[in-house]
Length: 209
Ligand SMILES: CC(C)(COP(=O)(O)OP(=O)(O)OC[C@H]1O[C@@H](n2cnc3c(N)ncnc32)[C@H](O)[C@@H]1OP(=O)(O)O)[C@@H](O)C(=O)NCCC(=O)NCCS
Image (cartoon, rainbow, N blue to C red; front, side, top):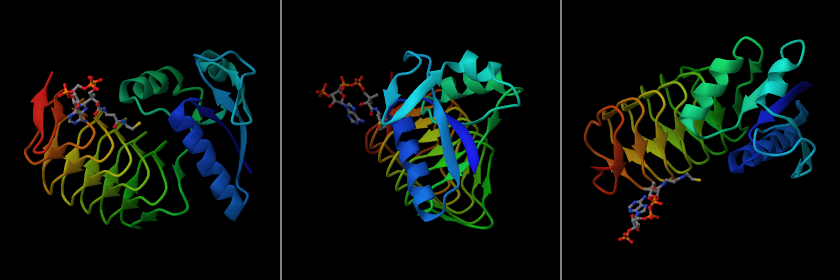
């Protein structure tokens, strides 16, 4: 059994708890030791699992505790990993319903939720989230700490930089490049390359903010 904590008891953390339960129903593999959350008091029960403490508590535990980083905010993910990299062993999790090419590269700490596809020669950097029902096309790259929410389609040969958030239902067309630290609003259809730190909305996607 892999014993681990779930960092983040918010919506995504609770979805990840469900994924562990669904994986265990097929073949028992995971034992959840608790949620780690900076915003909830220790002992708070979240869907039957207690909050064990905050990030400082996790980092203080002996023997390199194992954890899933179940947070969607890219900047928060990088902040937590930077502060805890030496102390915490980050787990990668792939929902049993996913289709992952044997020729895809999946970085440490990635979480890929149900019914997602990662196609041939796609490459996910460390701590990337691919939420449910999303597709990462062939030869597509997603940079470290980026989060791709549910029902997104990153078409073949496209790329999404580091620290980028793609809201629900985003589509990035083939070979289009989205640079680092961008925010793609829910439902955006990205047809042209996107410069660094852009916020894009609509169909066709245009910059806002
Ligand atoms: C774009 C976004 C950041 C805007 O948030 P906001 O500033 O709170 O915007 P508001 O809800 O006040 O809406 C402002 C206007 O933008 C429109 N709008 C909001 N989100 C939009 C979107 N994704 N695409 C197109 N128009 C949008 C609203 O209809 C509203 O239009 P109006 O002024 O004509 O009534 C947010 O809606 C979004 O897309 N977030 C992504 C969330 C997501 O997908 N999360 C993952 C799942 S949990």
